[in-house]
Image (cartoon, rainbow, N blue to C red):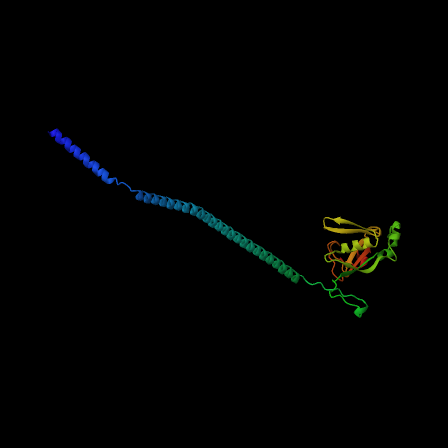
Length: 275
């Protein structure tokens, strides 16, 4: 009995389940099927259109994005090129300014140097249009002069003591070098003046150097030597009427001096020298 009731309950449950199942599954009519087909095709078409729109929009958007990126790159290039051109122009202008500055500095330096240099003055000319002799604007340098003479007149009074081989050495009436005004340089000595003038006029002169007195001693002029006219004979010099007590190479000549070279036969006594 119980088994039978269970089977009935089971059958009832199965029937209920089947009824519920059949109630959920609605049988479509032909009109509903057509409507459903049309709706599916419409949804399919719309989905295809959406896909088409999506496919169409993506290339355009990509092309637009690529175009925008290209244009931005071109703009960047243009900007960089313009910056480069600007920098070149600035560097060129700065270099030109530097060159102009250096040239202006050179011009100013040259003008300064030209202004600092003294202008050359034309030398006066003595042509026919000068109207006479022109004088130099610069004064001539003062020339130092003195008078020089060389004589041996004392020999004429002592011919008996003269070496016969020296008779032709006493000159004309005892004058070997007549009194003459000569020029000299500052600082020159009596020896310098005598040596230069004797050499200039071809007159023989012989001398020696004395270390004791640090001076030069005149031994002979015109081949007339010491001791050629007695034991006390020889050459002496006098400046402005005075016999100096030191050698001729130590006596500095002054402007206007009168220098006399004299031959003595008696140690200067015959020339008026007083010891």
